[in-house]
Image (cartoon, rainbow, N blue to C red; front, side, top):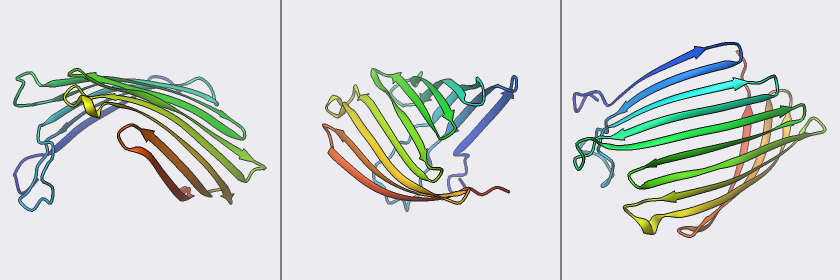
Length: 199
């Protein structure tokens, strides 16, 4: 950041291909928020953050893949000389068949008396080699020990239908519905047009 004359972001990433089917990755990120006098925001996080993560991916064949990871995130806060530590874990699985795929994932993070936990399941089906059907279900639970009134459980789903355009393009219309006790019902309608570009 030229205005504050300090580095706001730095990161290191390392990938190791243990075999043709196993990949292990390690990441470290540092983020120091920097703001200038022209910021339009009147509230923002200002504590430095360190984030370390270890990830792995295993291909059990052409159709099945598994993934897992663990992470630690620490915020340097003025209230604590040791910082606030957040520990997390992730996992996922994917199965691909000739006319579609199904996948699932979960994410758990806990620290400072608060936590976030949940996951989702996704499915996609191709009919007559051109019509696309998609769906996703998700469930997440949040707890904030500093603001217990903001703790909630969110349920959501997405339903989509589309059409495959040639070998690399597709048009997809998705309807999304999320609900929890804080915001009530939320709806979204999205039209996607995707083109795969191969160099």
